[in-house]
Image (cartoon, rainbow, N blue to C red; front, side, top):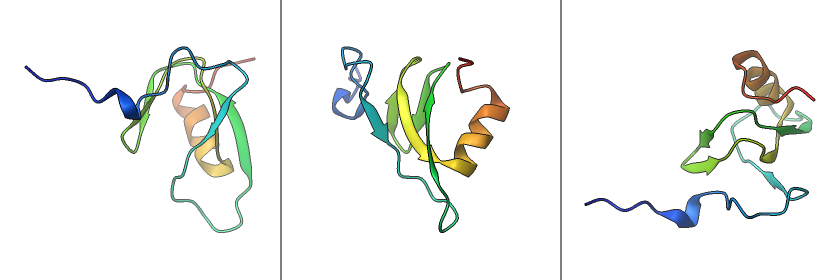
Length: 73
């Protein structure tokens, strides 16, 4: 039987106003954006639930919008 490692998952009981900064490879000097996820997303082994607010580089946020991962507000 396999058990999940819950220490790397975003806590479902986390406050809604908490924003996690995600470290992904991006161009130097790229600005950061805060986005709200519309779907479950796994970034570098960390799971983020729908409704989670994360801070990512602008170019990565643009790619997530095109793929439908960013909630429309």
